[in-house]
Image 1: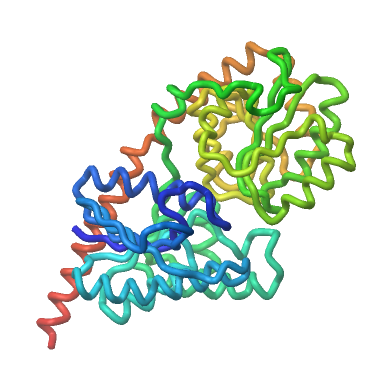
Image 2 (image 1 turned 90 degrees about the vertical axis):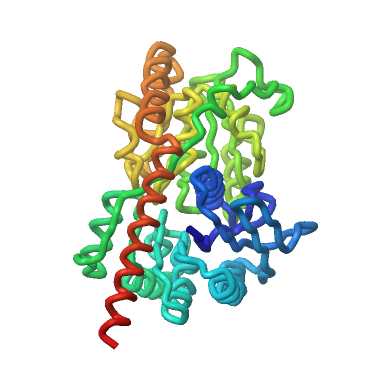
Amino acid sequence: MRILILGSKEYPALFKMEGCGGIEVHVQAMVENLQRKNVELFLITRRGVRQKATEHHRFLHVYRVPYVPARMLRTFTFNMFSFFVAIYLVSKYEVHLVHANDFTSGFFGVLVKHLLNRPLLISAPAFGSRQPEWPSIVKGLLRFLEELSLKNAGGIFLFTPDDIRYVRTKYRLFGTRIDLLGNGVALERFEAAKPIPLYEINRQITPESKIITFVGRLTKSKGLEVLIRAFAQLVKEENAFLLIVGDGPERSFITNLVVQKGLKDRVVFLGTRTDVDRILRISDIFVLPSLYEGFPVVLLEAMAARKPVVATKVGAIPMIVKDGVNGVLVTPGEPQELSDNLVRLLRDKSLRIELSENACRTVREHYSWPVVAEKIYSEYLSLIEHSARYRLVHSRRK
C-alpha cells in the first residue's frame, strides 16, 4: 500500500518554520505509526534552511518544496508546488491513495484525484472559515476550498461531533462517508519526561510558586487576551506565574497587554519549544482558553503528563474533558470565570491530583496512537478497495 500525504507544513515537526501547529504534530505521529504497519508513505512538506530536498527511508519518502514565506501566501504556494510533485509521485510510483490533512491541500488533492483517478481522503482538524482571526474575504475563499474538498472526497475524517453536524447540514453531505477521528498521544513520552529546572525558565520562580502553562499558536482563536485578563485577577490573590509556550501573529499584542496589566514579571514567554513534555512536568495547571478549537493534541499531552486542565467548551474539548471528572470546563471569552476556576484549583491540591489521575486514564484508554493509526489504516484499505471495484466495473461497461 502506497499513500501520498499532503498538508503538513514541516516534517519533522520541530516548529522552526512559520505557521506550524497541531497538524504537523498529528501527521508526524501518524506517519511514525503507519510505518509500523508496513505502509509506504510519500510525504510532501516545506523545505527549510539547510534541509535536504528529499529523504528516503524504508517506508517513508519525504519531498520538500519551496514556498513564499509571506503569511497570506505561504500555505497556498506550498500546496501549489506540492501539487506538481504529487502528480510526479502518483504517476511514477503508482500511489494508491491521496490523504490531504487540511482543506487547502484538499483542493489540490481533488485535482490529483480527477487527473490521475486516485481515491482522496480528507482529514479536517479545523475549519478556517469558522476561525475569528480571518477577514471576511479570506473566510469566503476558505469556505470555497472546504466545500470543494469535502464534496470530492471519497472519505472524510473530522475531529469533533459538531464539525460532522456542520458539514452534513452546511454542505448536505448525507451520502458521503464521514467518520470521527481525533488525535492521539504518545503516553509514554509524557509519563517519562524529566522536569525542566526552574532556573532555566525564570530565576524568579521558586519551588513555592504555582505555575500555569499555556501551549499553542499565538492567534486570536486561542483566547490569549482572555487568559491575560484572567491572570491579572488571579495574581492579586496567588503567587503564580504564567508560562506561554508558542509563537504566532498575536505575540506583539499579547506582549503589550502583559505590560499594560503590570504582569511583566509574572508572565514568561518561552517561544516555540520542543521540550513541552519537560515544561508540563513543572506545571501545576494547564490552561487552554480557546475561542475556537478543533481537536487539540496539546490538551491530550497535558492530560498524559498528569496535569489538571482548565479548558473552554469549544470544539472537541467537551468530548475529551468531563467537567469535574478529568478537568474543568469554562465558558469561552469569560475572564472572571476562568480566573475563579484557576484560583479554585490552585488552592485545592487534592482536587488537582484527582483530576490529573483521571485525565491520564482517559488518554490511556481512548487516545493512544496505536488506536488512531488503526482507524486510519482501515480507512485506507476501504477506500482503495472501493476504488478498485469501481474501476473494474467501469472498465467492463466500456
